[in-house]
Length: 191
Image (cartoon, rainbow, N blue to C red):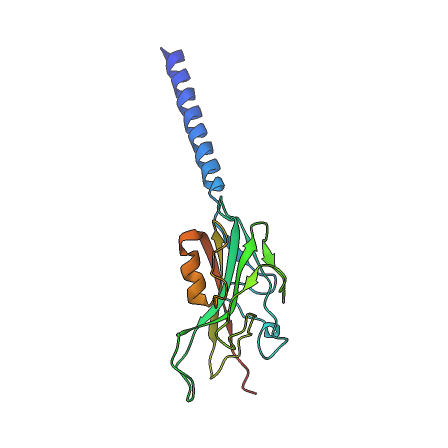
């Protein structure tokens, strides 16, 4: 009887070990999309080089662990606008500085100032298909969010479409497999 209970105990322990191992393997198989940058961290500061007070080029970003089935990526950098200044027209309360889409599935980063991969959408600062560097107005720290979207495929957009942030987000909504975001701050020097 003791031999049998010892075997049952070992079998039970082995079953628990197997179940835990399967759980760990399943958890690691469901990797979550992440975003990072070699020059800034989430909650950190947007380096001057990537603003209107510096070189004004787009910041480098990286992403990893896209969901299974990812065939394309899109990247958006935006901020929630402050109160309108005299002379400003009342418009979207979100300013988009960078809109990139149709980035190939093998892409895992955009280098600083990179313009040759994927397509650009129209920023809300100067309405160009290019990066427009933040040029924070008024006192205080402003927050800028960079989001990478993993997509089932690149969005289909009609020829001649002005690809603004709202247009892109509507086009990719049914294609989204996951997203990751990082927010950084920038405050212009008043000196």
